Image (tube, rainbow, N blue to C red; front, side, top):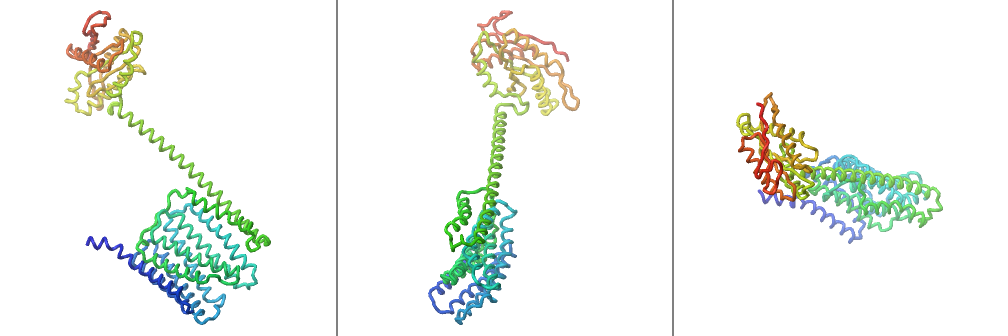
Length: 526
C-alpha cells in the first residue's frame, strides 16, 4: 500500500501528459500537412478540451469547480465555432463575417471571462489594491497597443456597422481576459503547475488573437495565419492539460506583501507606460495625423500615470508600514534583551540583585576604595526563617522574603545595592561611607526588623536578622570582602543572633580599637 501511495501522484499525471503529447502530435500534423482538412484539427482539439476539463474537474475536484465548469462550457461553443470555420476552409469557401462562428467565439470568451473572475477571486483571496493597480497598468499598457494596431485601423476602415462592431469586440474582450490573467499572475504567491498551464492557455489565446487581428487590421489580410492557428490549438491543449493535472486541486496562496514593487516588475510597468509616447513618436500608421487617435493615447497615458502615482503611494505606505514594523520589532527585541539581562542579574522571587550582579558591583566599587572614599558591605541572615517554612509552609516563607526585600529597599539610600544571595541571606553594598557612618547605617538596618511582618490571612510574624559588616578603606577583592563579612555574620549568629558584628582586620583600628570583630546588639521586642 505504501508503494502504491508513493507512485500515485506520477500515475495521476499520466493522463495529463498523455493528453498534452497527443495534442502536440495533432499540432505537428497540422504543420506538416497542406490539405484543407487539416483545419478541422483545431475543432478536434477544442472539443477534446471540453471532455478533458470535465474529466479533470470530476477526478481532481478543484477548489473552484464552478470556474472550470465555465471553462468547459466556454470551450463547447469555441469547438463549434472551430468546426464551422474549418468546414468553410475544407470547402474552400470564404468564411462569412460576421457569421455564426463569430457569435460563438464571443460567447465562449464571455464564459471564459466569467470563469476567470471566479478563479481569480478564489485564488487571490481578499482584494489587494496594489496587485489590482499593477494589473490595471498592464491592461492599459496593452490597450495602447490594441488601439494603435487593431482598433484604430478598423475605425478608419470602410467597414459597415456590424462587421466593425464585431471586429472591435474581439480586442475589447481580449483586454478583459488580459486583465484577469494579469491579476492571477500578480496577486498569487505560488503558482502550481496547473495554474501555470492555465496562464499559458490565456497568454497563447491572447497572443494568437493579437497576431491575427493586428495583421488583418493593418494589412487587410491575416499574415502568418498558420502561426495563429497553431497558437490557438496550443491554447486548447494547455487548458485541457491544466484541468487534468492533479495540482488543479491545490489552491494557490495569495501573494504576501503585494505592495512591494520588485525592480523587474517596475521595469515592465514603466515600459508599458512609455508605450504610448513611443507609438506617437514613431508615428505608427500615421497616427500623428489622426487627432482622435492621439487624444485616446494621451487619455490612456494619463490613466497610466495616475495608476503609477497610486502604485507609488501604495509602495510608500508599504515602506512606512515596514519601517514601523521594524521599529516595533527592534523595540520588542530591546525590551526582551533588557528583560533577559534583568533576569540574569536579578532574583526572580524578590526582584533584588542576585549574587552575579553583586560581584560585578563589588569589583567596580571596591577597586575605587581609598581612605577618602570608603565602602561598606553588609550580609544579613534571617533568624528563625527555617521555623517559618516548617510551620507555615514555603508560600508563607516566600511572602516573608518579599516583605523583607521591600523593607530593606525602603531603608537604604537610592545609590545602595540590595541583593539576595540565596535562601534567607541578603547583602547590602554601600559606597562613600566611612566606618562611623557605616555603624549608624547598620544599626538602622538592624532596627528595621524590630517591627513584625504581616502576611496574608492576617498572620503576624516576628523575625530578626543577624548582620555581618565589613568597612573597606582600600582596594579589596570581592572574594575577600565577602569572606570577611561572612566571618562577621558567623560571629553574630554564634553570639546570640539579632545583632550586627563588624569585621576588623589586624591593620584596622577604629574606636574602640580591637582586632577581630565587634558588635552592636538590638533588643528584640516580641
